[in-house]
Image 1: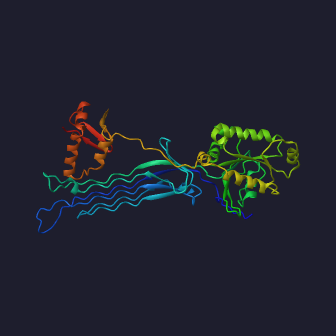
Image 2: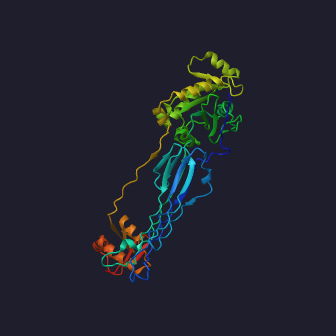
Image 3: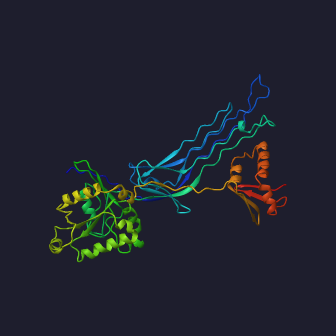
Length: 427
């Protein structure tokens, strides 16, 4: 058979915490038409461009999150400012972050799952670019035909996220430390994981790809050895059980030369079932390794168990039959079984926020106005512009902020804070 392989050259970086900051929207323009035959030209200021967003893309070309190990902050391009003659600013360039297929995106502050990028090409906008500010063409009225008011661009979303890689493979090799999983991966594929006769040789999942002449491709993952208590976090158990979740078929590897191989097998099965009953029901095969040893040969002669593959990673005995059964098992999976193995992309719905709600909180230093609508107003006001400041005060009164402050007991001269804006209250 013509075998090929693919392994990640080094440790598999399977989690990273990063800060993502989308681009700010560009400023709107306050331009007025300047033409010799139009003595009082109207507004012609263009809108600012939207800021660039940050998009996470799942791709098979990445096998690790190592690209995020030494860089924490990722910032997208800001939008350009608007200009005269109704010229809108260009949109900021989106920043795309490529991650391996099987990456979970979680909000670092709430631990909520934002997206599960389980298929090639899946994308998620993890930070939305800020809207560009409107130019003064939007503020002309019958009473004010030459408005000198425009909006600054809004800030883009800024959040800390955690990326977690759940390794995706067709077959996961699982078993106790030193059961021979790495040696079996080496024998079934051309992968070269570290192999040594002591426990915990494998500290990170290793991949190998079987690509027989028939053209059927099969990805195998050698999972680090489980120990008793792995399902409740003993050792590195939870970290590696998370990877096993993504495998479509489980291959239990047992050292046939151990004193009680069946007890070892049952312990591993028990840890899998405790961690995930669904995962324990996944299609499984059993490889009793080290048939080249006398103890394993004696085990085969006296066992009456069905469905076992007695193999030798050293001499390759029984490997062709095992490989054939693995391929047949994969070929027989239904779409439902595949979806249970995690080949689904999930984007959780964004919680709806009430834009109109405004609340006033009293503090020893003054009063804080809280509400999405009033925060948007602050973001869209250019406080260096006197006309824009006048408009800000009119809208505060129109949306009920002044009334809410008075109900809370505000007095002239009290400090008012809205987001990062702080000012003195004057009725």
